[in-house]
Image (cartoon, rainbow over all chains, first blue to last red; front, top):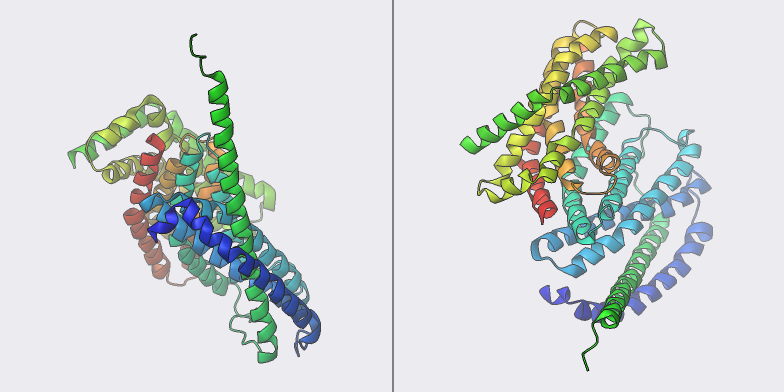
Length: 246
Length: 221
């Protein structure tokens, strides 16, 4: 694994993966969107609103997977000081926050026809909202310092603290929710009909490939930005260096 | 251990010399609580219904206000570097700082809470459990808060950032702290909630100082 700490090595592999991820993303979306939005049958209870699920569940899946990736990379960064692990975590965070927001928004849009209100204090909605705040805190902390390295390390520690806390928060919220709202909402263990399962898995695959493709693009531009910064610095250093005496 | 007591004694000494700091926290707790009857109306039933939650939220916010001085002064005058260099376990030093913070802000809040509960018409059955829940819950608040304070040390806009980092992590304490008092009022057993609060405190006391120590090392680099 330590081989991948070298940015050149890492990017060689990442660049090889990129066309596959991007291609699969396009293919899966091309299959998933028509099947999910047109050809799959409407739910017998929820009708066409069930189609929100394809976007909602996929976003929720990514927001959790991305937090896991951030936490794992933060641990690698703190233990072995791999710069690439830090870049991965930093590049992933805004995407995680966006998918978290998407899951919240689609959840609210789904909640209106299903529960009759945009927002109910459902355990999972509440946990997602808290996860969104954790993402915001992570992003805010990582660029709160003049010295960017200090921000990276503080944010990495925060990500690990969050990974310990997320299960505790989730459990507390679930318990709190059952205390206050006995069985109003029962999407708890919805079993998905096979006819709806195929488009759901296609959509989740498409979302995941989208994340990997954009992550590689972000890493690439992050490394290029560092290169440009270094080139500028050495240019300035050359220009301001004292001329050799003649 | 002597280093632990020495640091604790030093911090308590400093806090006593500047007792205005602790006083401000308690005053904030009082005024924040007093605002609620103006917001929701003076009806006794409404106030009694929300009393436990209001007291807990006000206590969390008051504790939050006091967090930035846990490490900032030491960070600015160089004492923090001394702590890092003195060869003692940094985790233990962190525990001493947290204990001092709890004694100077947590304990005054606990003492003040029954008084504020009276103004919110908390039913008589709730008082004992409220104090007990605060005794079990406020150490967690100080421990998580110190971790947040160490993370934002030396940042721009530290205070606002600190609340964004720390408040989501306070939610479990808030849920079980409030639930314990509500259980006592409605005649349910509050023991399970108090046990969970104690459990949260135990998790926090084992894990938070490690994270805080790591964050302090980064800050001093």
